[in-house]
Length: 142
Image (cartoon, rainbow, N blue to C red):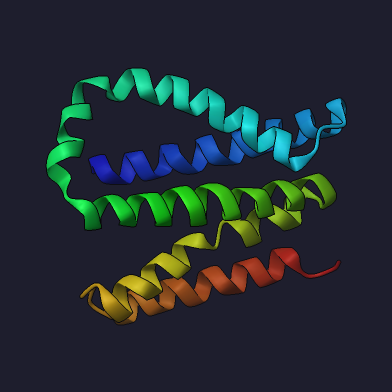
């Protein structure tokens, strides 16, 4: 139950946060790059303070795990993904951008099934298909 609640809180934080991010970009006439920089600087300060007791584990983690986090989270998701997201929310409507942008779990699940040993189940495939169908419905023009 605990992972489910964290996932639900993640969805709420990202969805509500996206609304305020778009409002801030538009009201301030800010570029997506400035929006990302402000968001990231705030996260670095807050997460740096919260994670300080665990910093000692970095030295024993090894190079490969650190590269996965840095390249996957920092470069791909944190930089490229966020830049594309901010450009999308600044120029598009949230009702179309958010459902498409938050198909990201489908990519993660597909990779986990293809390369990470996650089982491919009928339930999982149906859930993914329903997600894609819902996104297509929300994203289509009225």
